[in-house]
Image 1 (cartoon, rainbow, N blue to C red):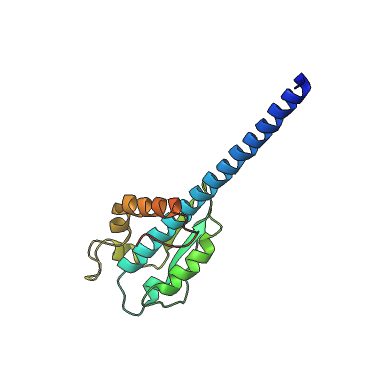
Image 2 (cartoon, rainbow, N blue to C red; image 1 turned 30 degrees about the vertical axis):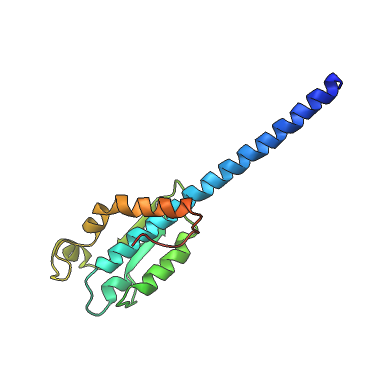
Length: 155
């Protein structure tokens, strides 16, 4: 085999290796994005579930934002929280590694509820969810390893 043919074969193998590395990097980035989405959704779902409920307005006012904190309140009532979580799952499809994801409730009495004003949630919602962050993150990582898609939660 001539030197040119051997060199050509090596270049082709190298090109194949480069494509394999690029594919691996792409797959790793997408899995990281899935972890971001699932972790954010898991946090939201846990906060919503831990929220006290009377009329459902408080649960209905949990909002997510990607890159910017949501402002204002909604008129939505959601006693079981499923509408909020479903809407957030759709919104979080745009979240990627490096984004800041905000979970907020802008109702004027949210802070009081977080700090024990409700007998239904005497330890708050956000603080107990943050205490579970590692568990939620580990669930998101495990799901991503097994090929889970962008939605889901860790609840």
